[in-house]
Amino acid sequence: MDQYEGSFSFRLLTLLLLPMVMRKSESTLLSKQNYRASGESCDSEKEYWHEGHCCSYCPAGTHVYKHCVISHTLGICQECPLGEYAPKNGLETCRQCAQCREDQEMLMPCYKNINAKCQCKEGYYCEGPDCKVCQPCTKRCPEGKQILQRCNATTDILCGVPGTGKVMEVIRKQVPGS
Image (cartoon, rainbow, N blue to C red; front, side, top):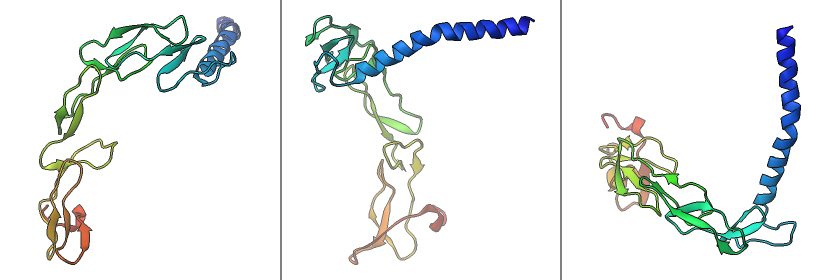
């Protein structure tokens, strides 16, 4: 009997809460539309939509403390705390500064208006913007090839035959002892 009552209570609670969740979802969807039912639209370069108003973005290095109550005005912005940053935005909180991984070095520290920039340490590289692990640079080219480009933070060595225009990227498995 207790199990049935618990199940009934859960169903009743779900039925009571469902309309509130649906209304919140609808208002979130409407707030993301560029053109509003009122006919007003926000300048996406300078403004964001919040509860019926086009509010001006807070300057970089700050976040929204209180949203505007009159369209095309600035609400109250608050400076980002130490260790956080924000670009020009309509965010209610600042973002956490990036921390360089052990295999990286800091190229630029985090400031209130821009995130830290990290790169692989010397002797390591990592390709692509979504790189997760720095790889050791290949030390030498296969026999008969020469280094045409040295390893850097984003690219392994480039091997080829000088003067022929033929370039061959090193594939680790082909180079013994690298």
